[in-house]
Length: 396
Image (cartoon, rainbow, N blue to C red; front, top):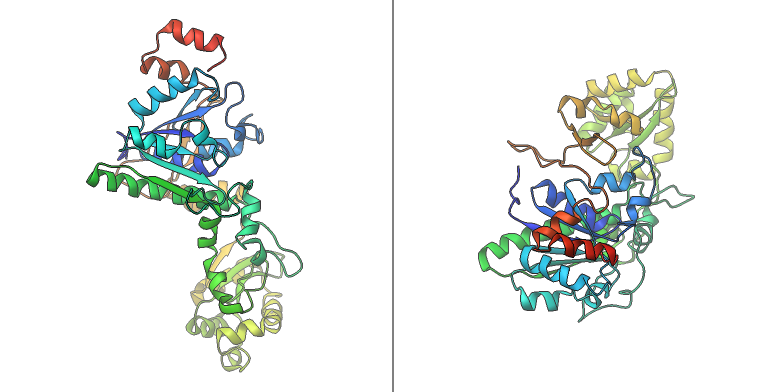
């Protein structure tokens, strides 16, 4: 499955947002050339050493890429970048600090002037629009900070304490919007022959994902309360303990399911017409009393017995898996969602990207730092003695 096999992406990226976007382009067959600092590389390489000495974030977001080390501030770098972008690139992606790309001569205005078919995607915390920059344009933006600014943290956690999401969802949201916008821009270029600039803001991406609680708090209304792992505005929908200490996650969506839950799971048919619980909004308002009824009913049952009743009643339910539970998940195994990728530390397991095609996606190795520097420079026309000189001068 390589619909982007003729597309080359040059990326000045670090951390998660841009690498996640470009990895997905690589999954579809795009050639992704990752520019990294000599000797150091993408700083996400150093986040941890959890995957046989490699960083977990880096393993996740950087398969199927080529690594070119280049000191972009070195005088010789300009010539390398000029050849690379003008001769090879269809797409340029960057999530450097606001204004850094322009200072390096990599701004969209300059690049598009000499290569109008180029697609340039800039990813930043708060957006980098030269016409409407906004007061936050130059603020540093890390995932947790954006989760806070976008209001996500305010509606996540317990009544006593707000929480962040476990995964870096602000980065992921921005990466997904960068990815889909680049695909749309490629489709448009196929019709018009012209590229364009894409300006992706982490704040705007996560604010879009947070729009349900935003609308819930419309016109000054109270926002959804923080309710831990339970749903804030639908009830019962969340975790409940069984008598053997197992936590069962369950969710009801409508009045038909509420009746079935009362009859077949709780085995208390009188609750169906209990005036405290005859609509979702009433059940939410009376969640404390209703939770106690459910906990009491489950106290004499094992987790397996609760799940059995839920299945008979056709009530949605799930296990509360830890990470090991996901590694061993029977559904992922049954659907053959695990494969392998190469890495500097040998073969590693990897999940196939979501979506099933007749042919599988590209799943090439995770690159070592600078692994492809010499081959890319040679491809750009640099002779071996010129490459040696660039290395001696610490340009690459």
